[in-house]
Image (cartoon, rainbow, N blue to C red; front, side, top):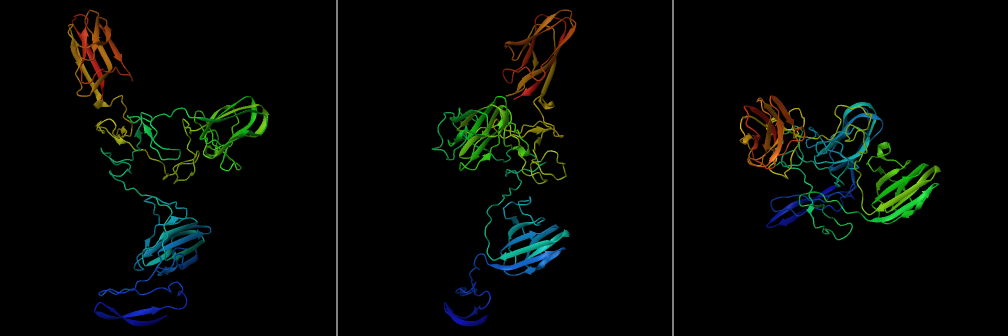
Length: 519
């Protein structure tokens, strides 16, 4: 390297500008670096970035204890790629610093773009063999063994000057009323934001896309109900009476999206539905019985059916065929209908892909452990029986009491109404006053005590002067009751009285009534 200078006139001023010429190792990478023209009041050297893919430094070591791996690097690195190998127990971090003294862990991504931890996706410590990458923004960077228990950690970290982007990124949604993410035990409030799945009202059945493969909205009724599709088109039928192994009929290339397979007869063997994109290499298809149950173990996937029944499968590949993969005896009656639309089983078993503490799906017979991850369903405590939706159609949370027990429509205390009256004449009398605007009183219990010496019939109306809804006969000197249980007697019109009227005048008839308030 050598240093020289030249004079440069900027505006009315002449300045002396130093130049650096580089030779030897590294010269090829920066041979085109030139000084930019300085401004009149500021002097700066502008250089071009080192070409992509150039390794500025390598940190490599066999780690058997905590501490810095190799040494801290000050090479202008902006990106690192760390690989760990060997048999070991411990924790490795990559850290950065501006002063070389105070260090902060860098968030790392693995090479599959699967983020290893929660908290927005950033994690600061690697505890297993992997290749990870991350971005450096500080002046210094180092590899650090933050935890060590046993073994030898083979660590190799490459430092680069360029910053390639990740191919994927997890989005972290802050927890707040204005974001769809909610926190357990936080109070629900009217107007909280969630994610709405929207469709388009299409009761006329109009075509909403031009051709197969176009994006299209979900068709709904004007009340927001999903519309059931009409009977899909039958594209092909495969049938036969099979007495040996082999393909039944021929493979089909008809654009089928689903298949319904029926097996009959007395036989011993295995029938498989297979799919292929090239017509040569075939893969067995998951099948469900008509009740929606997956018939096999190993996470729900099975390779063949060995009994009579009706089964369904969705087809995703170009070709599909029915194949008898094993045969022992009998005649297998096979009828397979290929449809142009996919089908949905009535129930679906979730196939566990990861039976770990951090996976949402758990495997049968694995022991629970503190800290296991699952999907937590939240509801809203509502002891006061407060109205939490402004009107029909609003998003609404399930109400529970302080112990988390659901509040059902068999009425908490705030939704019950009761009254008692005494009758001696045949005048229609209010039994239960109107509940207010939009409130129905649906009767759940009646107790009638006839203390007089005369049998009497009691007529009940759900509006003053209205039609008799029902009647109860009360013998002299007896008490009778009516309990509607889980099926209350509904009031026809909201905000009306319930009335009672005796068929004859007596000395004393006492009536108790209880109802639930419905809006």
